[in-house]
Structures are given as C-alpha cells and as structure tokens.
Image 1 (cartoon, rainbow, N blue to C red):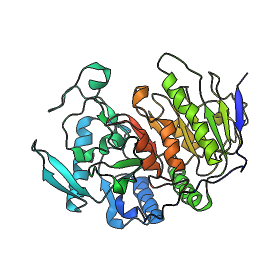
Image 2 (cartoon, one colour):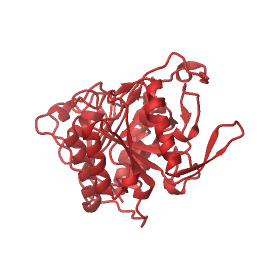
Image 3 (cartoon, rainbow, N blue to C red):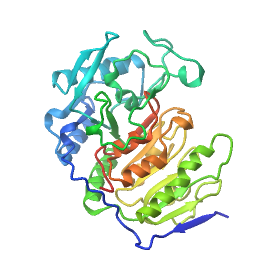
Length: 380
C-alpha cells in the first residue's frame, strides 16, 4: 500500500510571486549552438528571438554532434573557441594571476544556453598534462558533463580530476550581484526531438506570463541509513516549503516509486527517486505534465542520454511535457548532486532556473546537467 498524503493550503492553488523588478537578463546571456547541425542553428535563432537576445550573443561552434566526446575534443572544439569568443567580444576582462594563469576580473555574461546538437558529456581521459588527481573515488575521476565544465571556463585550470567546490552553492544572491566574475550558469535546451525543445521554450515564456498552477508530487523512499537518508531529507523538506507557499502537494513515503496506475493529474512539480528508468504513471498512455512543469528524479545516470524518450529520467521527463529538469551524466555520488530542497526553495523565491540549480549544486567540473531555459522563472 502506498503511503500518500495530500497537503492542501487554505488558499488552494496559489501562485507564489516575488517579482523583483529586475532588468532583462538577455544582455547577460549567450546562446551556444553547433553550426554543423541545422536544427541546432534553428533552435538557437528561435530561442534568441523569443528571449530578445542579441544576434551577436549567438556563438556557433564546429564540433561533434555525438553526446559523448573526448577531453581533447572538448578542449579544441568547445572550451578554447568559447574563450576566444569571450575575449573577441570583450565579454570578460582578464589579468594575470599570481600563478601566471589568466584570471577573470569582470564578465558581462553570466548565463549560457547550450542548444540541442552539442555534446553532452566528456569521457574519462587516461592522462592529461597538468592534471593533479587526488586520493579517493572523487579525486581520481575526470569525466564530466560538458555543461559543468563550461561553468568553470573562466578558471583556466589544467586540473580536470575531482570536483571543484561551487562558490555559488547555497547563495541567495542574484547572479549579477555575485562577486565571482568567472562563474557561468550553464543550462541546455535539449531533448529527444527539436519539437520538444521548441515547446520547452514557449512553455517557459507562457508560464512566466500566466503562472505555474497545479499540484506538486514528492516521491521519497523513507531511507534512514546506508547514505541514502540524505536524499530523503531533501525530499522531506520540500513539502514544508510548498505548504508555506500555498501549493498543494501529494507525498509518497513508501520505498517504491509511484505505481503504474496512480492518477498523477495536474502535475506542475515533481521531485522523486529512486529507479533506473522512467516508470510508474509517467509511462501511462496520455500522461502529460502541465505546461511549464519542473520535474526531477534523483538517479546516478538520470541524464546519461537526452536522446531517448524512455532511457533514464531527464530526457523522458521533458519528453512528457516538463519544461525543465536536472540530471547526471555519470555517477556523481549523492552528496555532490543537486540538493533538491535548495532547488525548490530558490525557485519559489523567484530565482531563475539557472540560478536555482547552481545554488543547489555543491560541485562544478562534475556530472550535473540542467535542462531547460536558463532564464525561466516559474514563480517570479
């Protein structure tokens, strides 16, 4: 028997509003696409037009269209061309640090939108000049998501092994006010098809105008030991946040996920774990999230691919109507994945998807990807 509780605020389905009167974030955003993939070019233009992003903020790369690439490919076809673009456009200013490496002093770009058609992840390298592996399972790992590596593009570091502590983790500052000029907030507009990406873009914009209304579903597993209790603590905090915001929430505390026949209707928010591949009500014919929905399932390889609508979780969730999701391309270890209670809290407080996800993520140069419009603010 599933142990379910339904929390309903007296105000019903209330929209949380924290309008901060911010100026447009479009001037602080670049759109990166694969110029060798026509649909990537088209999607970049579509997104830029919808968000009012200037044409000279579109950056085309000539790179592989495979989801997994080597470290050498990443350096030669992605990292270095992007650094060159930052310098040529004078988006950032550099000075030489005490170590002799460049250091970012000022940076007018804080958001990066990667378009479908770009690589997703970087396979492990056997050796890398200048790398300094550390002890332990984390310190020796050098595979990573493309997105997480690009977030530290301004670090100019040859060290690729291990994770870099995220200086923006747990912050409450909007990124334009954050003191670390080198940090980039990277999201990707990616999905099994280009049509899904277009829908994600338009749904985000429409939801910002009309509000994200509906039910939240939180699927915990009631773990109390073995290291997994951390994830359940995150999930247990989310209903408290939602109650305070006036958002109705359905909570499942049983060890298994929502069953196939569960009537998951009007789903605007979903947070859960722990299964290898999308299952339960998400696989029922006709299931759809509400437009603008945020949906995240904790799993080590939830975003191992974004091209299969039934493999893992991140790709399948956006394929079923979500506007945004988070995932991992390789094993991240639970403590270094996004803390979903922080993600949900920051979204409810009106931050963008990119800000909220970065504030929730303790490690960079690691395994996380954020899928969706970086400027999307469902509760602004």
